[in-house]
Image (cartoon, rainbow, N blue to C red):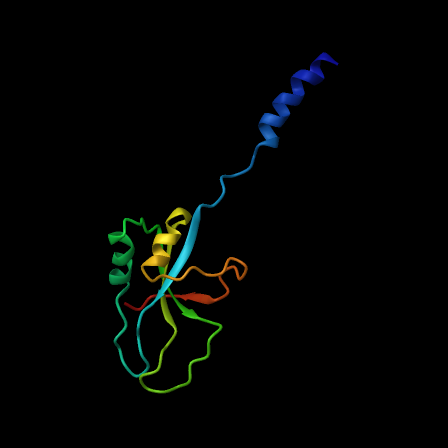
Length: 119
């Protein structure tokens, strides 16, 4: 019986507290501004600079396309191309205030699909 009291705290310490830290990152995105039939999208370095100028650390970057929006094929129309950035969740309000979109957490990123950047 004495050994049970000694073993139990050791077992809890080894196996019961194996939770990882919660992920404090969030993805935000902004339109590249590119229009159909034109090669006028903003470079990712410029949109990344918007975050950095606001004092936000960018942890990762990629490109993407909106997936839940259909764009009619017409020159001068929107393309749905995006720049996607991973930032600290605590900076999400600042990012939103400077024009970035925070995907709805209930969608779990389904609003866009990441693609390889071409610029």
